[in-house]
Image (cartoon, rainbow, N blue to C red; front, side, top):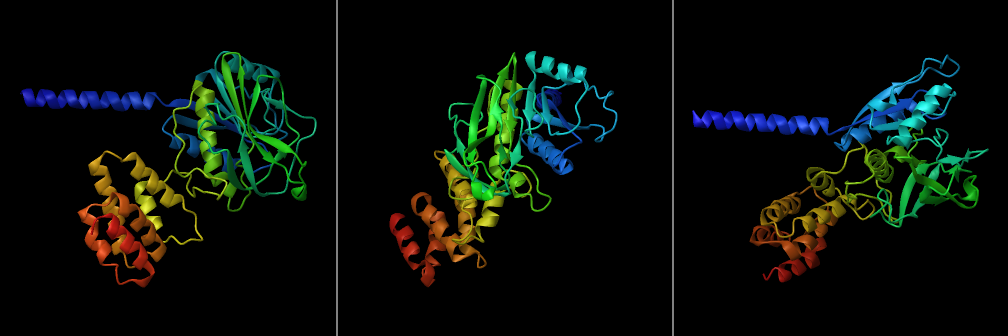
Amino acid sequence: MKKYILIILAAIMMASVISCNQTARHKVLIITGQGDHDWQASSAAVKQILDETGLFSSKILITPSKGEDMSGFKPDFTKYKLIVLDYEGDAWPKETDAALMDYINNGGGVVVYNAKSDPGIARSESVTVTKRHSFEIRTKAADHPVTKGLPARWLHPEDVIVQGLKPSGDDVKVLATAFSDTTKGGSGKAEPVMLAMNSGKGRIFATMIGLPDGGENQALHCTGSIVTLQRGAEWAATGAVTQIVPSDFPTAAAVVLRPDFKAITTEDAFKMIADYDIQKSTRYYTYIKDQLSKATGDDQKLLDLEKQMVKILKNDAATAESKKLMLRELSWMGSENCVQAIKDLASVQELKDEVEFALERLGQ
């Protein structure tokens, strides 16, 4: 009887944990329906990106189409912890605008995904955009929760730079900028691409990057635009950011994409590293090194990672460059479990130096 009571209690506790996890998600309303960009693609992507964090539960609300009657558009903002504006179109009823401002001033959070959807964070009489191109983003507010820990400079692919925006007051903080190159139809100066503002008890985060292009949508799939959107949304909703900067965040050296918007897993990293060559991104190798660093002091995790690296060494289809990377890491953290696999590569001319180095460091 005691055994069954314990099982029942455990089940109750587990159900309670699941319930808490479900209710802990912040409810998000994504408003879209009009715009010069592909809002169907962007709103669906924003929903997936936010929900992927486990912090949010998002719903998409589509406004009446352009030119249709907007008088009945009166969403109840107070039901949500965060409102995302992926919208540039007809004006809303004045009472809806007023309700949104009341929502913000009373503690609500807002993410502005498009510069023309402006609840007071920036203004301009004339907003223009550059031609699509890849460009460098520079972090300007390293102490702000959204951008804290991000690289000072990082590459962003095939996007437009919105020009002519001016922060609407001293309370608006420019988090990041991009130089608008005149050869791409730009202004020849640094333009803000991320802004943050406290308004009353609430917060507004605006991002001008990550717009779809109707093709490969590299800007939308950029890890930088994904992560900053996730972090900006958390800050707008709660005033803090608990998410760590992931190991696949881009740097000034290379663009990094997430084809399905999801963060890399250990399984993904080892699967993809097998095809590595020096012309490809080091994102998967960087991830593996990051996991090794985090596993320091945990013998079981290190052993599990070592076994995965040994599989790469034994994989006849894996590239020589991928094996060189694994040999480099095994040389300092490997155990007797990897020694034979390393010795088996001694006859491979391309790997001779790396094999000898690894065996020497391992005391063989």
